[in-house]
Length: 318
Image (tube, one colour):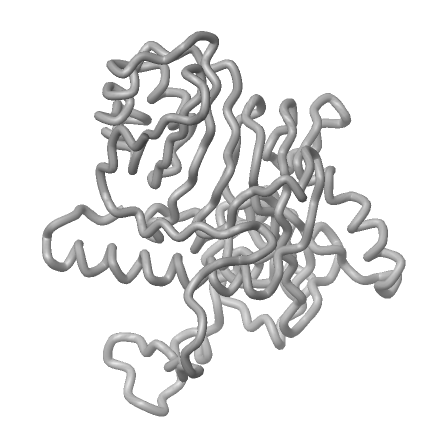
């Protein structure tokens, strides 16, 4: 039973092996976006002046743009042999010699990797070296990195993998790991309107009044958040919540506001990719090209809808 369907989140569900999404259709020619005042055929500002260092690192798959900025501030990045501590420094990735903690960044377009992980309880979504004191989601990718190391030249740099968004340490379920900064930013940004679905198990049966309160929303991180929908599952102590904002501990805060004590919380879907039994707890699988393409298309569609709503004044910018 669907208790509340507050808004259209562009939900398109599909199995993790199917990568459901829009299909068919001919290829669309992508046009290069021009800067304001730029004439057809003129080089862009990035082509003339270079790309911001933090953006160049993120596009190369080193980390998310925010994490790259932190690495720059920490003095871990050098350009042409000189340590650089300004994220806005302009560089030409195909010409300048950029090094990360002493390891030269491969010039040209580095290969991008995309993984689906069924996160277990007790794992954190951080890349900070915990010296073994905490288990990290990226550590589940170590067998892949070990195998890749055997295939790469000795001086080659391994991809720096990180999670797309986060799940708190006690939450289990589906999370994406990649080295593609642009993809990570697209999927995780609220303006992309990517919905996430969670299954909640309470410590006791949940009442209709509690579900109604859940569906009405709550304040999370200083903003009022309303779920896309709240729906019941097969037993009275279990229900589903679909959200779109992606704020810190969003579902847990919604539950606390409704007086629901969460026993377990599991994410079962991101956009049009659904967790299936084939991906066991703690397991990792590479995303198919179809899954990546369909999820990217879903995010692009969401951004267009969001931009239109902002222009029409029907919805604030995210």
